Length: 204
Image 1: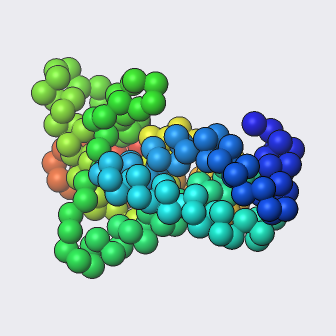
Image 2: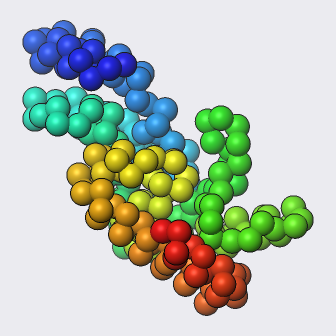
């Protein structure tokens, strides 16, 4: 769906044709749900957050300026809701672990690239994913989010820039710091060598 098509639908919704909003939901619901799922690691929480994101987008649609696409806008809403959700969970003492060993929408296993040497056995692969899950869960929510957007969701720097309303240079530096932080956590836990950590930092 092009931006012009999205703009036309938004104008129809604002003019009172509320049912037209469903087309925007259908266009973007998969990406929004996958983001909330990777952030929370729980299908029910992810579904609730994705629905909340679209509901908030609908309620505040008149404030949408169209500087970025509707998809980037609702993606940012979902990202902020996910970060707030994780903060509430931490305050309540709940432990949420991101699931990286579930396949993505293309049926491929999801792994953070560039942070570890290729494991040689299935057991090592499982241990690697487990270590990365724990490392991601230990990161601040904003760092966890930006790594998921880049290394799990495979968004471009420009897409992340639009979704989070950040300058591309800021996105790159935050990704670099987040990767370095994750690599440091993994190194300190004994799961990765310092050579691996340097590699992740250099490629950030």
